[in-house]
Amino acid sequence: MNVNFFELDQMSDARKREILRRSELDISRYIEVVRPIIDDVRTRGDAALAELAKRLDGADLSAGAIAVTDAEIARAEQNLDPEIKDAIRKAAENIKKYHHVQMPKEDTWFVDLAPGVMAGEKITPITSVGLYVPRGKGCFPSVVLMLCIPAVTAGVESIIVCTPPTPNGGIDDASLFAANLCGVRRIFKSGGAQAIAAMAFGTATIPKVHKVLGPGNAYVSAAKRLLYGHLDVGVPAGPSESIILCDGSIDPRIAAADLLIEAEHGPDSTALLVTHSREVAMAVKDRLPELIGELPPERRDYCTRVLSGYGGIVLTPSLEASIGFVNEFAPEHLEVLVEDPMGVLPLIKNAGEILLGPHTPITLGNFSLGVNAILPTGGFARTFSCVTVFDFLKRSSIGKVSQSAYEGLAHTAGRLAQYEGFPAHANALRAGSRSRP
Image (cartoon, rainbow, N blue to C red; front, side, top):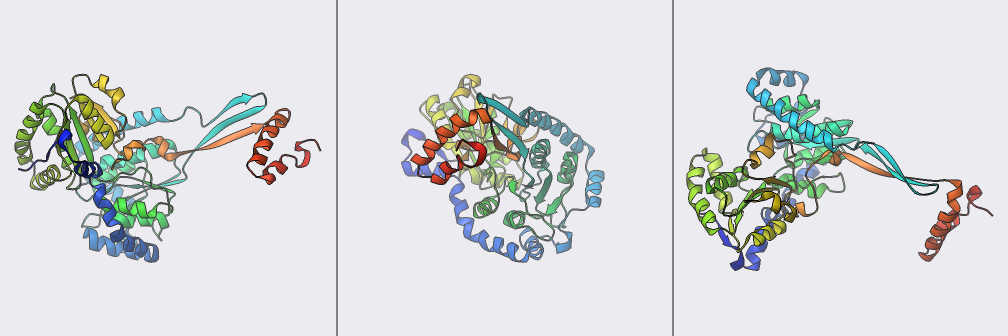
């Protein structure tokens, strides 16, 4: 099989730019594809959603059946394998503990800046959020947990979930069970760009929300870009991507297996092994065909296409160069498989998540470790963070000045207001009983 093999110090600037852009290169091409979908949903609402579910998801769904019913949630819990329910409960427990620790200790705080001058913040939950859970290549109750738990922990008043319907017009049992376990019961059968549009504008069934979070394919990412300004589109979470950072100390069998974790998500994923050890690089390359051959046909196809498309192996001249490439790439998932992972940690500047050592594979982060697996993609880890409770909270600054402190502060503000050409600002300082005539 063909596995991309790049030598960093021999790579052209054009080739390097192509690798760094990964599937983001394609997302911009979807903008005009999703634009008419968004316009259709804005104009026709539920009728458009039902038709798009039939055309894009193969689901025969009437406009009146978009909302999940209590009976469907109860049936899902009854039908779901007890072992899967137990796994979801255990994962939820760790995720809840992790996000509970993130919550601010106080929702309002003040500090005295000077005698009679107080400033602070008031922290409040966002009023309404929409959580998007993809389905195209599988069902993802883990994503339900990663989104619902921090939203509920933050105290968001109105939480909805949108996820694509199955061909039979339902939602998978595990996702319904996970949402209900979190206390979220407003779930809607809508996916893709049309779901993002529905949450942006509202329909007769799906309410308009202030913010949407959740990963998705190129269509979902393109819709978020078009709808920015109509709602807060949150963390840019597009097609999956990972870097496995190795030195010569790692067992190549571990590195090869972990390289396939994100590669099996889909053909638009990115999966790179970055190492300065030629021995490890070649051993991984030789090991991959056997590991891929053991996968089911669909996942085998995804991995093959990824490693010959947006993924592969990058050989660098040194560990320092490998770390430099990681920081430039800013991956969604980063595994650090080196002799001293804690020593490398301070050098990592840009990554959605950093998983240290051979006993912390991406699989654990995705499902049960407790850290949030909804992460920035497409290089946005340079400026965006993993999803936390803070994505569901907002801050209002607060100030209070006493009568005795007013005069001195007003003098300073007045001088600056006049200097910057704002006479009304300065005049307001002399109004009424605030200052002497």
